[in-house]
Length: 196
Image 1 (cartoon, rainbow, N blue to C red):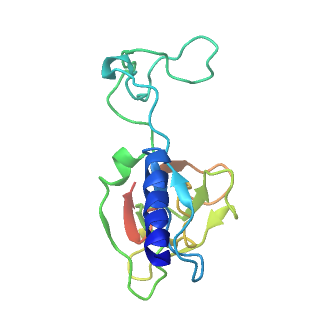
Image 2 (cartoon, rainbow, N blue to C red):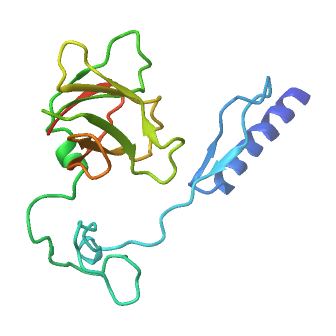
Image 3 (tube, helix red, strand yellow):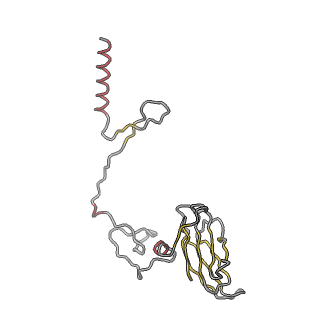
């Protein structure tokens, strides 16, 4: 009789708990080091329903901003104000149009290499444009077999940091020599080819 009484109260307690728990209640995982069952996890149900036409479109490069919003896109649809179809230099639109190939297997998987081909340059240097960089330039060397080819290898690149660099080529010796510059983006695990 004691067993039937205990089982009946146990079943009643489980049913009562099941009726009292909200619909969004779920049990957690069994990661408590031998504890049976995890702590319940409350999942809030959505309370605000927004009609799709009320949402503003995602911000577009060159979209106008509202007054005093410090670069935030204006609410509602806004016309694109880009005058030409080209993105600013060094952006993803130009990076992946360049010739690339994988780095050698023995290199670190997050480094990147740039091969700069510039005809008639006496000196080529690569500088970072990110203000949070750890050092000013990227070390490189001139190819022994081709005097117009320069190789520059980066340190392992940190994800999430824009790795846009400036290449400066000097044509001659002295302080007032003509120079040219190009911008490119290091891509982890790839050798980027840059032609002047």
